[in-house]
Length: 377
Image 1: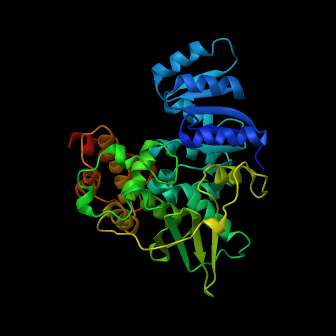
Image 2: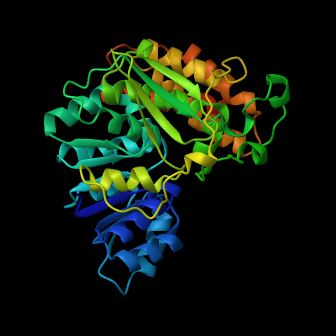
Image 3: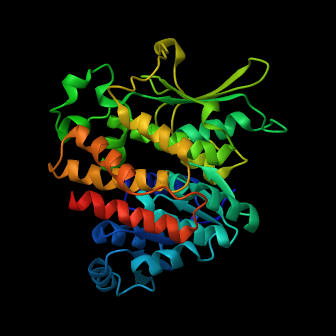
């Protein structure tokens, strides 16, 4: 059970829900970190009274210092400040920073042997082997917050050797489930942001619309659970009640179920191995028919390219992730089309050579090159 918590990405969707759970459980917050939302950060700092708040944006940090001038809260800026927030005296760090920006703060927390409530899948997508090796070396405990990986984590509890034959990742299918490629050529961001089941930030919502999010989760599952690509399957499950399943050698399949609400896996990451009463109700299976079917990889090629990058390994997943991040923001700015996201990823993977067994520095350099390539295209 966590006692003192740092929340990185506290103003985002997962961060706000995390603070809701922290309030519910009566836990204490030692530090907060975010990008630039100073008004909300001020409100959070005044309520939770952390000793430290870090802001990526320097101007926003200067503004926050003024806003919190009548308090004892220290305000730091830049990546250095966020890394310090991850390195404070907390026993648990919720890593809810969006994108590859979460990698260095997560590594800093791992090096101090903390529990990592991991809500930043890009950390493992970019540098999974390095991150997991560091966690083993420093005795850091990684408890996934993504609903799918939390489900797998829970299904493997009590399995003495964690031996499984298959991981089955479920996906809602997003707002365009059942659509054809022709129907999606001219879709706008307003349509892509209408997720049918989950309330999330804009970047992850677009990733869900392209199914890239499931591709990122595919890679994350490989590293978290030591799975080979051929031992992971993706199924579309429109109801989002079964969050993922694990199949074992004897043909048994364990599934973790719950209503589509991120507060459930957030709370479990903070209370593990205990279970505490939740503010979220259980699903009513008499009112919820469940269905499953295979994803359409031709209509949603981002999932296919992510699986290919997973098999390639090396710096390919980092290039794919960085190109996707930049392309999603270009789509949200109406600068490229929906399928332009996929085209940007394919272009970056084709132009940037894949390096096997990369160092952290080489991964960060591949990430930089991919972003620059997409922005200049």
